[in-house]
Image 1: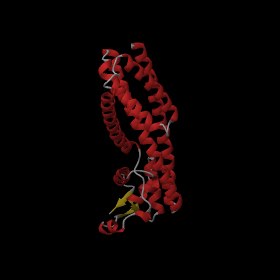
Image 2: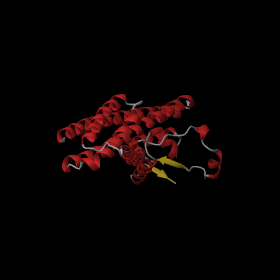
Image 3: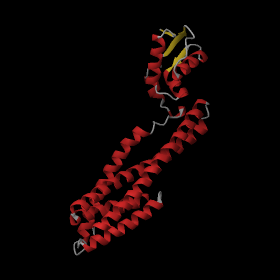
Image 4: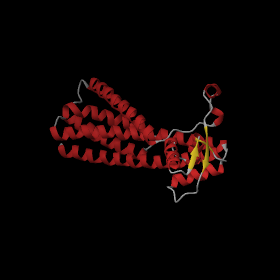
Length: 254
């Protein structure tokens, strides 16, 4: 029995690795589409900006499903390792089967290769469940209990995946036409910072060079939001670089 549990663990680990690799590819693909979206917005090409933004949204749906499935399998592997170490098969195998079955169902239409392998693992675990006597007259109760715990595990995995998605993927920019007018009307106009370049200075860090060029090409004015979008750099980084340029005497800000 322990040999079969070890085999199931190996196969589950292999599928988890496949999901990890797919998550990395999806993140890279999203990065490419996001940069194209920003470039199209800067070029005032709203049609392509919307196209790239929609593609990012679809990629992120797949990324969320992949990541949540990966986290669910991680939970399953930890539970199976407990079974392998302590041999408490009777108490642990039914919830594990439920999570594997539910995960397989969710990804069947998106990642069929992994789904098929999870189906094989599910059959292995079901056979072990029958051999340990868990499948009997009370099968209906056991299936309901395992499905309830499986849904709980998947919901928790989905919530964690949503949080990690916020950390891994930048927020998509809204097209100008979709920005609500009332909100814009209630907000104070964005401050434009008048800047004078006092000296060419010595060699600067890459971002500071780009900032100096940006200031020159915008007649000594800088909009933090527009500059951030054009240079693809967070506003906080721009503020810090501006302060360094000011401290070095390279620019003067009112």
